[in-house]
Length: 496
Image (cartoon, rainbow, N blue to C red):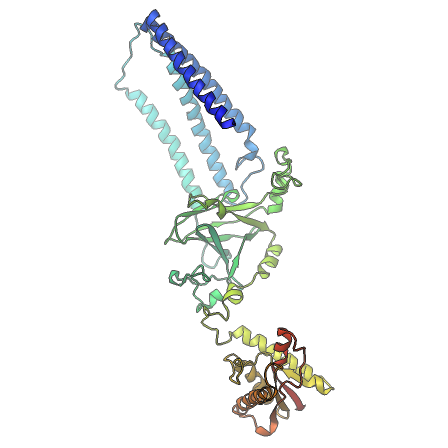
């Protein structure tokens, strides 16, 4: 109903405008064309002058009124070191271009009023004026020279890359429709190599897993940066043109497919410090429409946006950015998990799925040695049993899995270290299936472990093996977890 009424109003206004036009045309014919034209010129000139005054006043007043919402003014001073230089250059440029803008608008409308068409007035033609041309060539040239030289100075400062060996935090932002893939280096401080041919549903960046630098890289959902530390951003696009835009830090750089770019900047205000600055201004004391229980200054966050129209999902590329103190940044960074270890390790994507990495070998050996020391210090026989947590077999068989060899090598190292130690290797199963079959399987698995150790030059009189089938459960056989716990290989220290 509202739409219908609006359409009717528009139609009526159009009819009225047509009728007014017809009446004006008739009046002109009665009074004479020249008189009507002169009256129209006077009216247009006067309206133009009124419009000019209202327009210029509104421009200045609105800029003053909204100054605390605009970047570079009020609470929105740049939150990066280089940002202050950019804001200064912007203000200098605005000063000179603003003067030209105001003068141009005044002259434009003044000339339209002053030299309006009148009867018996003739136009003055000036095909050439050397003095005037020199003035409007030299003055802009001088102003532009200072602006360009100042701009180049700021550009060179802003776009300078880091020096070799300079301390810097580097992370990578890859734009794609419609999100950002954010990658931080792990403890090694280096980002691993990429190969676009390896991009798939799991490996969104095409990371090369044979490059050890990739193994500790972190994939995160937000950008977290420490205050006062230089940051270098690698900027990449995977499909179409995107733009890496951090407005509060005055950082803006295109992400171009096939052409990696970068930006270097140093944050100078934490998120909390920026909020505190906003809280001093009445404009930000109003409730947030999305969180009415909080004020606007309390809900403020730095953000990463894509400043290119990269498709219909462009809006969803917004990401949060947090700037914190250095110690809080370190806590956050240490709490992140390696993408390789959490999502790739042990899958078909992993080129090392059938072997352990150096740090894993060390971790498992340390855990094994701790268990051995605890067992050697125990008095009760039940506490002198050590479960081989990382010795596993193929389902329903006595074939060792490839990674079991690392744990068995730890047993060999232990027997070589403690030359008087003797042990019994024992195999156990759950109660699934036939008891006799389970007994045979447990014996076979214990024998395989025994043979592996003996083949590493450990004397046969220092160990024996036994299978106990399903007779010695350590957990319930009524649950999957319990049955998994009962399927085990262990050894008992007999003498040491």
